[in-house]
Length: 147
Image (cartoon, rainbow, N blue to C red; front, side, top):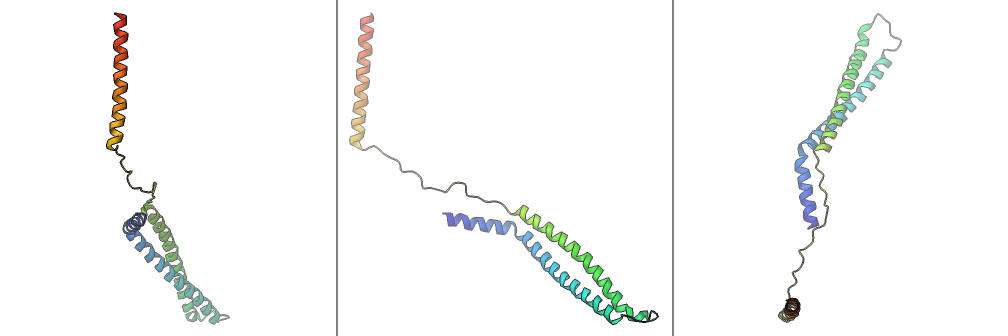
């Protein structure tokens, strides 16, 4: 029965949090992708700056690739910041939607009913009847003596 409870619990958690988990996976993939792009853009800025080092200030056209790469870095930084924020929000949402299922008490089979056997029932009934008869006789005698 514990295996059945575990299976049902896992299935319920999986179906309850499926959308949030998918959303979080997509955000994590996008974050990783943008992080790679940002690293590439930073490297590109460094390469472009190395290529334009000590360049004649009149030749601004040669600085255009460096400026473009710098814009890419800034855009990717802004996107990455927003994606990291959204990923953290998705993680919080997933934790909120994941239900906590906890087995409080292990299930046990019902207790067996204990029945009196015929002999035991007759014996107990006889003892009880004898006790009641003696009690009635004692009470009658006390009442007779009082009157």
